[in-house]
Image (cartoon, rainbow, N blue to C red):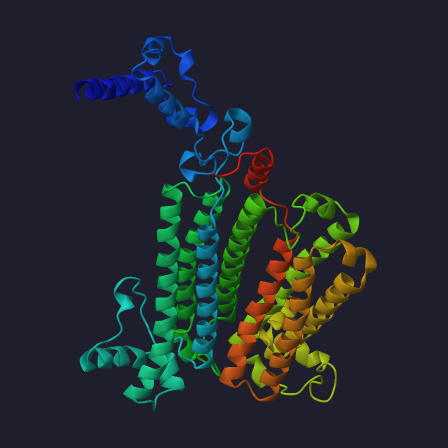
Length: 491
């Protein structure tokens, strides 16, 4: 018994003496990078030569020589873009959980855009007359609270000019949509900021991600303030003094609010997809559908036809965004209730010039603002512009699809994912055109109009996915892939 206890104590002393020789500032890094060799430490040689503990020391040495997991995120630095070259460490690569979180956040933004469209279509956006970011989460819970909210609404121009005969129960209906829209915005904020802080503190974000995601978080906060700024434009008492004025929010502020939501959605969706695709490339060598040779992206992206095609995709994505933004002006001015026919407008391809550029919309004495004011404030011109942009987007998407699938040079070079997304974009463009025409012909019914707005987000989704399919793997993913090819495989 005593010899056994003595041997165990000797082994522990051996371990302490040996571990004390590790570099003080990085013992884990030392284990991560190199193979432990106890014979290099003079102080421990006499202990290791003891015949009593030779077998135990060999076992300890074998355990120490087992390399630590090369891909354990705990050993990565968040600012390690060049860490592989400098220290041999692998840089941080965001795990799939980061991509999943971003895609879920994008899904919430998609939902809030659709709910916002229904809020506008049901004319519910002016039912809540205050902005209370914290206490506004709870709706009225008692009849007295409901009556207090109803009294506030009765003081608005919308109630006095349009809804002066609605009951408390009808008010609850429009209140629900605006309250839901605001609560969803708060859920998006909390659901984005809290995981962002967690992933940042755990150092699970690729080096370039923190600043981009922080900008998105700030944009979410700005979006809430912009939403209230938009609502406030429809609550101004000056509307009561303007002949023929309709109580509604400013179309400029509505377009800014919707455009910001589209930018936020595209950023979350594209970043989430990129994170997941980088992980797949780094760990499996898969890139945009190419499974056998992960390095094929170099050959594809250096192809002159692909580069020209990629530039065209970027331009088409911008056109899709611009078309959706013009739809905000159509909604803000109720321009969809005019010229409910297609493809003609009043029996002709375009309305008369004096109707498109009506001098009544000019506010400058010399009428120098007649052009831009009609473009943004004349319902007839706004609808005509939206038609032109929609037709152009449709034709451009069709051209993109046929080039990607019929051009022999591109068909043989483009990744499988890119060709699938080109097909999806063309299919979604057809659906969106049918939804838009149906919405116009049937005088903007709420289900069709809401589906049309959702369709614009879906079309943008396919275009962003198409862009990401032609994105080269991130720097961290490339370093990981090279490490795997050199034999640094995770245990």
